[in-house]
Length: 470
Image 1 (cartoon, rainbow, N blue to C red):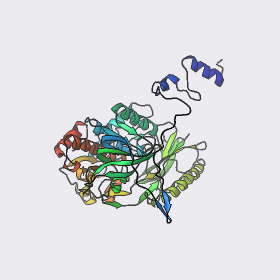
Image 2: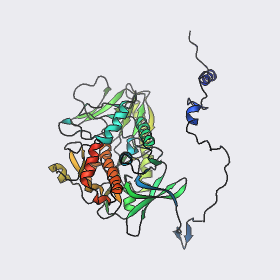
Image 3: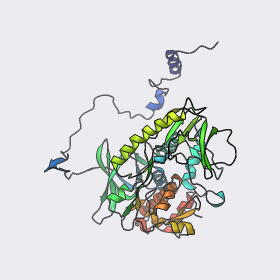
Image 4: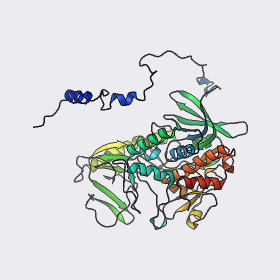
C-alpha cells in the first residue's frame, strides 16, 4: 500500500535530484543561472549622497527645488506603459532594429489584460465573422495556444476567446526578454522632458531608485491615461467612465451567461442549451453572480462594470477600490448559497483597478461615430477594429495636433468617446500599439518627425508584421 510521505521525506526526495530553494519547489540551479555573480548578500558599501533636494515648506506653500536628474538611459524609442498597446509597440519597434526601452508602473506586463483580469479578447471579428485583429495580437494568442490552460475558445467565431492572466504574463515576459527590449518595471512615468523647441525628448520616472530621466528620440505614450502627452502640454478631452474591479472565483462549475436576448441563467456549464450567449459581459449589480469560465479548471471570472468616476482623481479611485473589494466578498457570500457553489472561494481580486477612459488626445484626426457608421476608408489606415460594424483606424489618431516626437497608443488615442468605448478594448490596443511602435522606429530610421512618416512604408511594414489593413 502506498504511504504518504512526510514533508521532510518529500523535500529529501526532491533534493536528491538537485537542490531546491527552501519553501519552494524551484531547483536552485535554475535561479543561479541568472544570478549576478557579483551580488553579495548582506550589508552593502555606502554610496555617495547627492545634494539635498527635498521639498520644503515656505510661507505655508510646499516648494520643490530645482535639481539635476540622473539619466537612467538614452534610447531610440521610449514606450511608456507596458499594457496591451505598450507591449505591442515595444516589440514591433524592436523588430526594425532600433533601440527600444519599455517602462511599466506595475511589476508585470499586460496591463488590464493581466493585472486587471480583463480576460475576454474582444472584438476580434468583423463582417462575416472574419478575423480583423491579426499582427502581433495574433502572435500573442498563438503563443497562448501552446500553453496548457493558456486560452480557450479560439477560432470559433463569433465567440471570442478567454485567456489566463498568468499565462499571458509569462508570454509577454518571455517575448520581451527574447527581443532584448530594455525593460523597467515598478517605474511610474510622472513627467515629460521637453527641449527648447517644445518637442518631447523623453520622460521622467519615479521608482525605488528615485526620480530619474530617460532620454529618447521618439516617445510612445501607452500609459492608458495619456499621462506623458498631458504633461507635455498636448490638448486632450478629459472624460469619465465606469471604473470596476474584476475578480476570479475558484472551486466552481456553474456560470452566469449573458446575451442580448437572455437574462442571467445559472446552471451546470455542460448542460446549457440553445444559442451561445456572450460571456464576460460586465456585471452591474452584485446579486451572487458567479461569472464566466476561464482556461483554468473550476475557475470563473467576473467582469465588474462599476460606477462612473474620475480615473484621474486619486481620492475617488482609492475609495472605489476599497468599496469594490468589500462588494466582491459580499457577492461571494451570495454565490455560496447557490446549489453547486457551496465551496466556492474568492481566488483573486485584480491588483489593478479597471479604469476604462480618462483622457482622449486631440489628434491630427479624430475618429468619429459618424465615420464608423459610414464605414469611412482612410488613406492612412493602420488597422481595423472588429465589432459591429468593423471600422478602420487612421494614423492621424495617434499623432498630437501640435506636439512633436510623440505618438499615442491604446485607449488614449484621438477618438470620440462613443468610438473610444471600442478602441480602448484589448485587441484594438494591440492594433494601435503595433502601428505606433513601427511608426516610431521609421521616424528614427528615416530621420523625420512621427507626423511625417511615409504612410506607404508604415503600411508595408505593418503588413510584413502580419497586420490586417483591408
